Image (cartoon, rainbow, N blue to C red; front, side, top):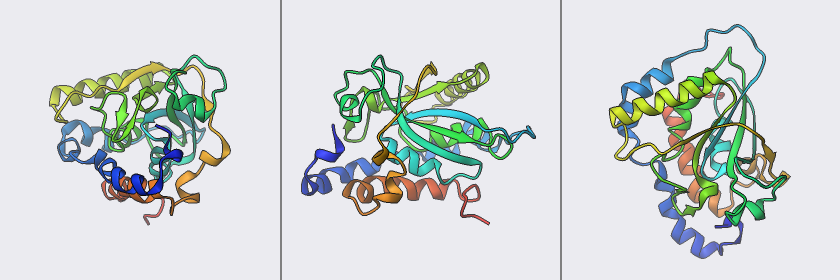
Length: 226
């Protein structure tokens, strides 16, 4: 579903339900696994940036959320995991390229750990939904971690297993865990989308509610916290 082509009136009426995509996270946030991830601070002293690549539905939402975290230096929206080289947003929206909407998250591992980023990842969307988030439907909206190292793979698989063993959600976590191969940056108008288009209907009805909830959960780890 191409979000930019939906008439505003229908969009405002229908997408109210998408804002509920994060609801039901209370058990997850109370789980031992979430607390473990969220309290596992980095032990490195290197300030060389590392990269995490997450797909969590609409990349406008994901970008806006991860931009808030201390230690995240830059977030880029784009596409990964498909078979088409240099796809356009329009092509990805058809669901035929195999790509997911993702964000490349460039972070300082001396300030924030990959574990903490995973805690944020499994907070920022509903990982029990297969190939959709709310009213955004299609394989391009799948929940996915594209790992950049064996350590990222091991941690993601371990925490996913623990979340399912602990039944932290009402349903099983279906997040795909795949090796990172390529990242194709989306068109310029997708970058920093929420900050540039906060009055747009999708941003008001979907992104902002998710962002507000995200900020409440990670209070103390936000760039705006002192």
